[in-house]
Image (cartoon, rainbow, N blue to C red; front, side, top):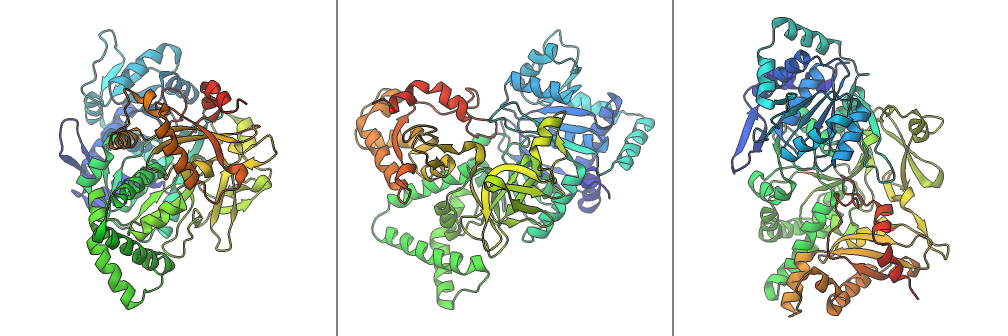
Length: 603
């Protein structure tokens, strides 16, 4: 079987020619500059020849340390043509993390994006014995005067364009020799509980991923447009973007995640993969606007939500045709209420919006579908080439992460652990035979570390990360993510870390949504000079306490947060509280805020 990624650019260039493959904005410009399939083929062939000229061998690891940009895709496809292995590093990684991955993968060449990426790569060069060369994507990078090993991207491409016929023939021979057993990438885990591990994903995993997504996502076609804003180092975005390119879907590459809302309004994509936090913020913003409405406007929105819920959740969700009167009402309210709301967000052309990576509240899922936003909830891991399950087109159940993908098998093991087997499951962890052995059952099922069950519809219901479960001193088990997801719905709450392991009750470290909180303070004439004063204010604490109590309705008494601490700053990757995929590092949070935690349990 041919490797899809090895042939993808050439195949689609022959099919689409001068049609746009992707577009991107460049610093200082609002224009989205397109790159055609023919141009992508030219650049990726030049990159392939440049790599061969630099002595890259089949299955050699190449490190890529950059924010989203077209050059990443060109490098990837140049590498695949050489049977080489691009290894993406999160652009937010520290020099220590970059050093670890470069040394673990044995990378000889590292491609870097901006100045900070170049500086980090230079700082670790001495401690990485295999590292020989840096290639800079950004032409504005200032290269050190004594640096004779760094090459600019333009020079790298020029090297490939000037390659000899012998070099081109060598690349062509490698491309033809590629096999499904070749490694296509290493995806390093986020390392919430230890050192990151490189999940070995062969091309056979991506071949299968393309096939099963084509079977499941039948609503997509090459007339769609996707906005790429999650990091291309994340398996979710990497696999999704590859799938879009495979399908001929135009991809708009958002370079700065802070600009995603602006990019949405410019690109108006029909699809986009994202993590739940994006939709939590959308939900909080819309709820805030609804809360400020009065009179006929509020009545109309409330009525629209009732009609939308009935039509989309009770009929469209199940593939049933709505009664004529309900459909007529929905079309009216969609035109007057929902469509303008979607237009403001930038998703008025929406087809599907896959979301995964963390739990998304059932309330938010129902609300978004009520408003005609087709959220497709899914579940997967780096080790499974992303998707294990996702919502089918119809018949999906709120509260689940969808049904299992074609050709993938799932069973429930000890401690209700979700076990996975199938063609998209990794080969193992790079250079870690002991960790690989622990990751699989004796009969070959991958241990996800997630607890869950399969409901009567065949959908997966996630309950908790097994490692995150803790027990109070009263012997009660607590699933912190479930509580954190509830609190994430609130417009005044940005981040939550639930505490309680071997404690007598549950508490929480909470990062407020500072802009919303400051607006509340101004409106209620609460004086403060800085964020420390704001979070310590009694009225503010009462506001958060009331909202927590409301959000905890329906939880058992022992699950409820009894005390909380408000922080005057956000959790961050730089301080170690978050992984590069924005997951909580609970052990570090417990250590950093030990004094505040102890104060919540003081008699």
